[in-house]
Length: 206
Image (cartoon, rainbow, N blue to C red):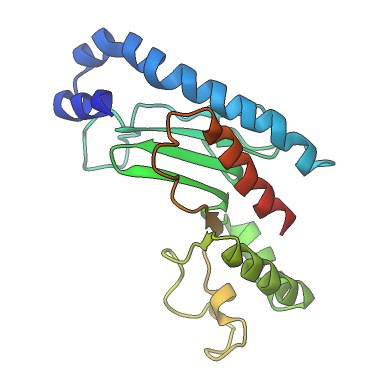
């Protein structure tokens, strides 16, 4: 993690340009190799859906709407998606992996539904698919995955009773499942790919 600590302290274009070879060798190339290996092994699990080639998110921060003017992220993010939107619009993720100063995160799902998808979601969860989804989420939790709820709406959406039996699903802005914490010592080992594939398969097969 030394590279990220130094980047956080410097946060300058000159420093990053001079140290880009370290970023490439220590982080970008290994992360690319890791996500490509995982993608190859997960592709059969998703058939007949197709997975787009995996990729990394840019290390440069989007400063257009941010008061924080620091130019670089202090983490690296790899994304594997079903075929569709550009990588910058993550949408549904077959795997989302982030490693950096704030720790590690690995999971699957859609962080935030766009308006059309949100409307479809609410129609679905109030019908028969909602009962099936509750069973799926229960299996996710038994697999050690955490179903995201930090960005749920506090109030019920307009048009639904506050005591609706599926209120928890109706208040969701998105649906993502985080894997358990990456075991200590695994981060820089080849077995990390096996661990990621295991949990991604468990998420798909639920």
